[in-house]
Amino acid sequence: MDNLLENAKKYSYQKFRLQLPTYKRFLHSDVLNSKDKIVGIYGSRGVGKTTLMLQVAKELDFKSDEILYISCDHLLFSDVSLFEFVEYFYKYGGKCILIDEIHEAKNFEQELKSIYDFMDIKILFSGSSAVQLTNASFSRRYAMFKLPVLSLREFCELKLDVQLESFSIEDLVNEHENISNTIINKIPNEKILKLYSEYLLNGVYPYYFVNEASYYQKITDSVNTVLYTDIAIIYKVSASNIELLKKLLLTICLSQPLELSIEALSKKVGVSKVTLYKYIDYLHRAELLRHVTYEGKRFKSMQKPDKLYLSNTNLFPTLCNNSEKGTIRETFFASTVSFGYSIYYVNQGDFLVDEKYTVEIGGKSKNFKQIKDMPNSYVVADDIEMGFGNKIPLWLFGFLY
Image (cartoon, rainbow, N blue to C red):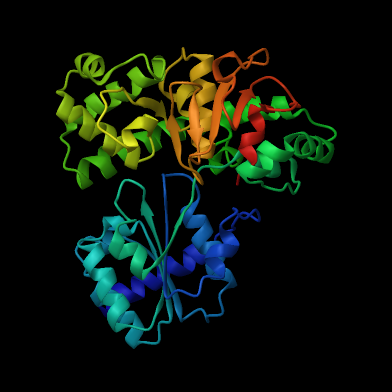
């Protein structure tokens, strides 16, 4: 264990010496100010979980020999008990440890519980969304924070080096004209619709700002890692069936959200309906796919198809060349709204948000015909800078976080 700790400290020092981005994601202060002994950050690959942990660690009041960074996907920890290693570090004066890729550790749930029960040590850990890190035992013991992809607001802040405010759904439906005007005035030399168009193509993952040229290749690599490492290992899916998962993603990329019933989709992909439901769940948990259910299914069993979307709009140019504009619009809306609010699809309109607001999504000429006479109903329109009344610009929903 002496050699292991020595080597771990060597790699940890190297990690802490890395130049970190000055930009801090919106969860930074929440994680930094959490009083919980153990704090977890989970999310899809590439959203900046490791960077966030390291940024927070540099602001914590620990000496260099009291804090340690490890990654459970490193060969050093391939056959090591997480509990025994943390206990050893703790005995030699360790007060804080950052554990990256915790889902790669064997029996990590039990190991983390034992650390929590028997040691007074601060832990920050990160994990993949593919893992069930939000079950009752985790949420009861630890502070858990989900880090989503970059919002349009964060993309604009990074690109333009400005500070922009986020708003709630209630703010948007009640004050969208004033809010739109405020945002546009803060970026007088830019066009918000141009920024929004850029974001749809390449604004979702922070590493776009590190190397634009290799952006889509990195997304492809991340998708393959999620499929062949996270899903394959965690859910014990064979390599041949991983190819079926890729086929499922491609089919959804090319289709209208409600074009495919489960029966039709199972035939296209070549798996049974039971297996397909499992695969949809795996991809949804891994944040490659977004599964939006029919509103009526909350109350009774109904044979209605669910809407299936790619998790974010940057996956479209990565996975397929020809995608429907309407699908991209709905994908953007579902991606940004589902982080903080419940979202279902409905018969009248496209979505029911927060069990209150009915939303119809379309182009700038979209009218209220499909949702007329419905309370709390709104047209969310693409290709407009400013809205009026119950017509709200689609881009504005990129400012929810």
